[in-house]
Length: 493
Image (cartoon, rainbow, N blue to C red; front, side, top):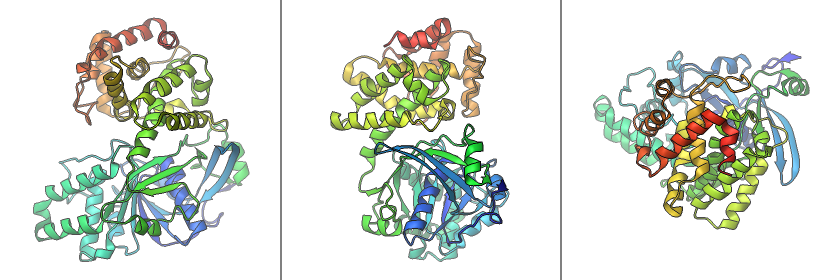
């Protein structure tokens, strides 16, 4: 088979209109796939410049294939099987701002740049007060973006028509609001460096740049290891960046206050391309439903399934014990914390289970477990607290899921010898290592639940203050250690 590059495969050329912070599987199978569809079906005519948000990443791999790759969509839509394989060619080039800072900053001076898209994980949108305007580049994603915006402001002398439409895809509620707040914090932090430009730059950013809050939804297992030989033969190319994803997709974009729905739809024509893109006044109801009923179960089923000897989400759903656990968490616990009509929630929940049961994609539970603690804080902790408030008791499935995460972060090996490799910030991994070294599950529970400065940063809440939680987590930790995960799950069903 031929190697995949622009010498062996056709590649379209279009103006660079989009800067994309993030080169991972999700953005390539979701945002770039959507851009490709808009190019094919409308006059959008855009290409994407990918910027690696951290120092070590995949831009060299991307450039090695001239930024060409395939997306394999598999699943069911409206009861019909879907199995497509498309070559995506919308990424023009990929940059590492740590080694190519001049080229990165020069993007600000390209007049046709109009959009910024990002997915830097839940931890990516944060304010780091150590960042400086003179850094090359700033360490945080919002810092890099503020540097780029200031360069654009200077290059075009505050031209009102050169502002950017910014659409973060990080899975945190009000992601656009958080990102805009971080940018404003950097403008204030760098006030002295901005000098006489401070007021004008601040005004230009707030009036002529448009930061949208968004919700993205597509399960992306990533590189199709199991099917790669068959898929490469089908494509006719050696593609080391192929991405496998479910057929379902949804992009909800809340219009910013300074831009109309009509104007945003005109500039970003997802609906005209026949895509499931919703531009709305309020993203919140869509976000709450999706994060609670899809991502919430995902986050806790993954450690429970893996520690039960199950590797694939679909297999977890069909397991007679873990499958009941998943449905308990979704229908009996998390669904009870939402305020939408129950019939609507039950339909959505059933659709989610159908997506979990995708017969085409082997979605590894370990691929969901990156940064499990931040995910639990944003996806499951709110439901845990609301359930306790409404019912007067703790939701046993969610508490067991938290204990499973804590157990997974102990590391080591599974009963069958499979490795247990937690993947989170070094501070969190080190904290769990130290706590488990005590050999005291009570200390482990208290230490994790009380780690407001390391784990529960967003809420800042000491979870030991939640009535009964410390005792219940300790009890679950002891049960998991003594009789294993599946037997512990049986006890709450």
